[in-house]
Each structure stands twice: as C-alpha cells, then as structure tokens.
Length: 203
Image 1 (cartoon, rainbow, N blue to C red):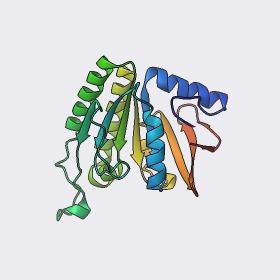
Image 2: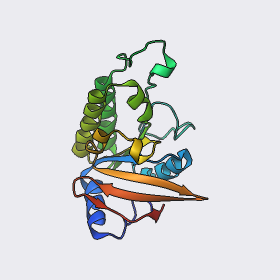
Image 3: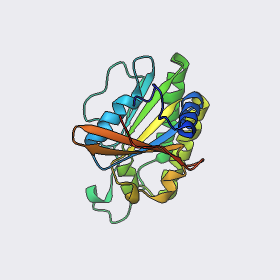
Image 4: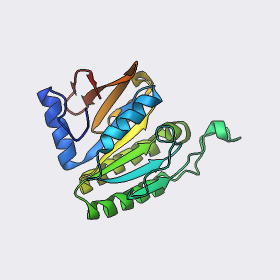
C-alpha cells in the first residue's frame, strides 16, 4: 500500500490514517529487515508532489545519496558507546539542536508545498546513544511540528516490536510493523490512541 493511496480496509484504521495525512503527525516504522524498511520508505515518501526532508543518523535504511531536489538533508551521526571509549552514553549529541534544525527544514518546506514527507533514518543510534527522556522529548517535539506544518514524519527503527522501548509508542501517532516474506513486504498498522490494529497487508 502506498501511503498516499487508499489506507487499509479497516474503517477505524482508514479514518485514523486519513486524519494523520490531513492534520500531520508521526509514524514509527519497526521491523528487523532493512530491505523492508527501504521498501516502506519509498512508499511513504510518495511522489514529487510532496516536499521531502531527510534526517540521516547512520544511513541504515537509505545508504544512497538523496535526490538533489530534496527540500533538505540533515546529516547528524550519533556517537554511541560502541564507537567511543566512554563508558556512559554520550551527552555530546544535542537533541534540542536536532529538533530545531528539523523544525526549520519542515517549516521552510511547508512554505513551498501543500504536503511535506520526512524520513528519519534511523532511531537506533539515538536509542543506543541518547538518554531516554531526551529521546522521548525529541519525538514529542517533532510530532508537534508535524502537526503545526501538516507534515508526516516516519521514523525508522530496524528492530522487532518486542525490542522497542515502550515509551516510544506513546510519542508517535501510528506504528507500522514490517515483515518481509520472500520478495514481498507486509505491513500492519497500529494506532495507539484508539488501540486499533489493521490486518497484515502487502506494501
């Protein structure tokens, strides 16, 4: 399913996704298979009618160079314990500065188009390298900006659902679980506010 086409058949899910696209919000995309994330990302970004903003922390999902026509590409690698001799999580990463940069890019893009799609690749380095309250605050701030600008932001997290910190689910408007089967990728949508979950459908 392409994000900008018809949502899943379930009426409650369809209504929730229509509201998300209309009002703006955030989506957490989870699943272990990186190839499934890449497939989903292309679908969620939509076509050239949207302005695109890319936030890259490790290039896990989108290793290639972004289109020169993108409204903005924000490069923000995260130093984690595995990449540092420090035994504690780094405090050098400024989540407030990142949210300010993302907000500026989203507002500028919204001035030039009716619809903005943002790909955040990926949350894994932030989970490993940033304290949890700062990460939750970042997600909440980006969600507020998404609603302000009518944008849709999707955060990639290559991980199984059971491995996702619980607080992240409450800081987004929708969760998409991905499952790769052979050459096909399937998705299941969950809306935390209503507690509704869609059937598994092929992307």
